[in-house]
Image 1 (tube, rainbow, N blue to C red):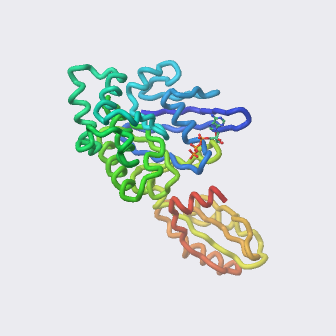
Image 2: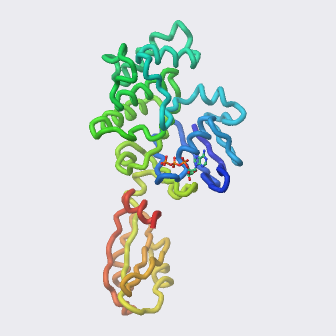
Image 3: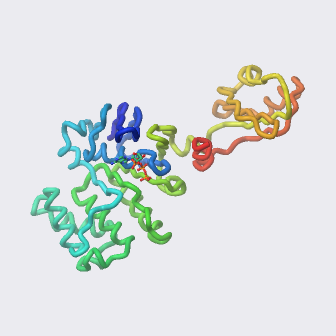
Length: 304
Ligand code: ATP
């Protein structure tokens, strides 16, 4: 559904995106995670045809976003970071205006508005001016306009920002319902949001994709942390040669101790093998433990 190939974008001296590549298949719910200034909005604006990249290519449903902007926008439901809602219009009048702008055929207009209103739970607020709605309900109006033309792809820029906990839960339920019929890409800097909603996460940091993984893969990653006390010969070659070990990383020294992160193949039972190696080589063992990977631990490792 989305193919992004070596996209780069700079604003003057600020490199907002650098060589970003990924693909998203139809039906996936993907969280685009990153700290402030990581480049999420820039990427979303390029995908939705609101901004031109300096280099690289993005296609939606096989169509280049630069050369086919109208066809691409017809396939996308987009909720921008600050959705331009008209406070004086009623929900109904606003949705009708947006349906007209999206060239929904007149004979389908009423049915499309009703479907969007039903999906977003706005039925009781149709006649109220948008400016009088709570922020959560205004966000629903933003989502309703995004789905009016029954897009196959929903792109949502921080859909829960500024909402209270109850509203956040409601909007998450809503996104999950919408994802039954559409591919969803949404940006956020809230880790539990990704865990609650997504099949897959893309972590963007300083304009680069640092992680592109299924959440299930992250949870099942097989990694062990080995901490050795004091000075000892570098155990990396020995560790790397152990059965089931795929990679060894040396972490920065702390308190005179050195920690190694040892990656294992799926199903490899690393701790006993590493323990035996430590015993037979006389390594001053301080700690040996399986590392559980969460989005939070990955994020802090990347930030570190
Ligand atoms: P946030 O989570 O804070 O919304 P983001 O991940 O969406 O951040 P972007 O808004 O894409 O990040 O910004 C990426 C970088 O580009 C930042 O350093 C930002 O200051 C810069 N930037 C974004 N828009 C512009 C602009 N119009 N002019 C100059 N710099 C910009």
